[in-house]
Image (cartoon, rainbow, N blue to C red; front, side, top):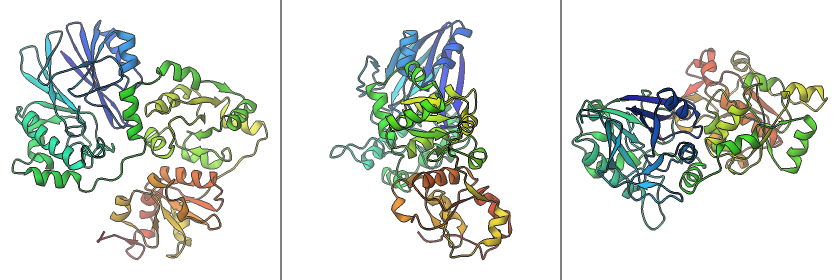
Length: 469
């Protein structure tokens, strides 16, 4: 038996590959199925099952393409009702894979079909649990994503999750390995550890939600307190996972098309597309196509695309570093943006060679900003509210990037704004959005709050904390 965790940092997502005696299982696969096919081929194994712990909200799973390419059976837990052929397993059902077995444990709470898969080794000993979003390291899944108006509430789901954890997971032995679907950085939980796997015994000791003396009422209160609004694409991804979607092969064929400057401009106008610039923020700031939006491929690209582009069917033209065209299309598709329609052939250099209009982003270093800083200047801090509340510059206004589309009425086109985030990535995204909407007096502070805190601005007269919310 071999178990491999395949972790994707930009989504803080873990898929799993299990192989035993010529048969393999994939749990919670990403949209791109090649890594799983390659592993199975190298091991001389046939993929027998694609196991889904639940209808994922934060990414589009690769279950349909994987099943089509391998003949594997897609398995969901009890109560799942997808719009395609699957095996809906019973609670306690045993699946045989080579010389090992996998027991289906129905663990509703994060969602109603949510299930944990218990892997037993060749001797029948409990070896590991694949918990999806029911149990994370240091946290549990949020119970507010599968609310049904008039049918099931957030507190109902939290109560189900309490029962699932105590009746199905906590009775297992301390040496059972916990393999969750997500780690720190995912919006599917609040307090996830940076570790991506651990032992159940440690979770029983240190996970706040698994306290032995915790009542159901206390559990419901704690897991529902402090939840922030989920990204807008979550319910849309969950629906795609449930109802089906276009094959990634088709999405790639449509998206990886090299367009000349003329064809690019024509598509931009005729398709009412947006132009996404995926280069590094430092490169973008020095020159970009007017009206384009920056979301760099090097950071949490998919998450920010999902948070900021509200229509999954939005036609997208993009610019990237040479050789990364398919990567951009794949990473857009991971969160359901399947309508990439091509990229600028030759990149920004071809745009300049064609003598097309070019824009730049004004920037200050942290040191230069510290010299001109006054407490009543228009300073936008685009970090999340929790980051802002922990520590921020005196006079700054919290303008979270997550909700920039909703809060545009709070800014004025005739005002000059200085913008920063934690490290410089999100502030360039925010600046590009503002510039695309006619805000020309925008200044980005390079390096963000981290760089600012390393200047004289770290002194107490410049920085304050919010002690009461």
